[in-house]
Each structure stands twice: as C-alpha cells, then as structure tokens.
Image 1 (spheres, rainbow, N blue to C red):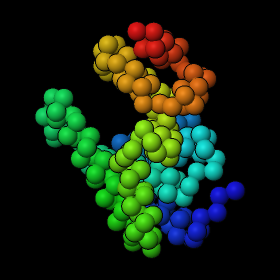
Image 2 (cartoon, rainbow, N blue to C red):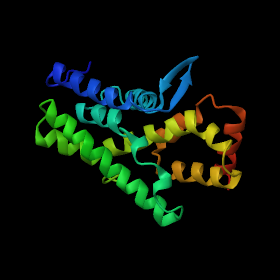
Image 3 (cartoon, rainbow, N blue to C red):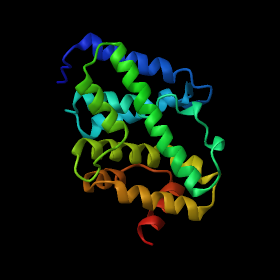
Length: 199
C-alpha cells in the first residue's frame, strides 16, 4: 500500500494540480459525463502509471498527475507549422509543465530533492536508463493508443497516424508493448496499430 511521506501534503499537491487542469476550456466526454480535457488526461495517465506499477513512488505519482498541466495555455499554432516549430513547441511545453509543477510542489512544502525528481520525470530525462521515466513513457503511449488515436485518425492522414503509432511503439518497453497488445481497441484503431507494426 502507498504511504507518502506526508499524506496531507501529497493530497494537497494532487488537488492543486487537478485544480489547475480543471480550468481547461476544452472538455471531453467519458461515460456520458463532460470533463475538462487536461483533468481527464491527468487522471488517465495516473491510472495507467498505477496499473503498470502499483508500487509507484511518490515522485512518479506526482509527475503523472502534472505531466501536461495547463497544456492548453501554449497552443501549437503559436509556433511555426514546421517540424522545427513542432519540436520547439514540445520542448517549451515540457519545460513549462516542469516549472509550474515545481512551483506548486514548493508551495505545498516539498523539498528540493523531490521537486527535482518530479521535474526530471516531467522532462523525461534518461529514458533509456531510468525505469521510472520508462513507466511514465509507457503510460503516455497507452493513453495515446486507448483514447487519443481514434480522434487523431479523424483529422489527419492515415500515413501520419501510422507513423505516430510506430514512433510511440519505439518508445515503449517490452512490458508496455505487451499491455498495449491486450487493449480492447476500436477495430479501426487496431487495424492502424497492426499496419504500424507490420511496416
């Protein structure tokens, strides 16, 4: 069973993260209930991290809950619609999420070491050698496959979707891939995944 060093502080941090993400003006429906998109995303990511590792550390649980905190405030269209523009947007987002998460964690009393660890996870440093970064990456990819791939298929070319799946697959661990293959995916999504893995 999970026992944070300070249960009240941990819950306060989670509540602060959720309060920030609850301000997302975009919403998404789950089981017929509308929810702010980034709040729902944070909950899904947290759930996947715990499904992969029920004994996830406090820092990993915190990082999962704030991975995309207030993401909507830096829109993609404010950057050049080029590959360098996309990469710059992604990097700036990661740094923004890590910085804001650090401010919130400091505000509720977390120590610099824990804050630094959460930031490192947010920035996905040392993916090839850090098992917790890999768990977070697996969870991100699983959320993508389970909830984001079908909407993406409806607004972009099949070639780009297949490429996105292939890239996600390349980032996943063997365990993450095993879980992904067992997902009850929409038939159209399953077909795109099959194509990505066989090309």
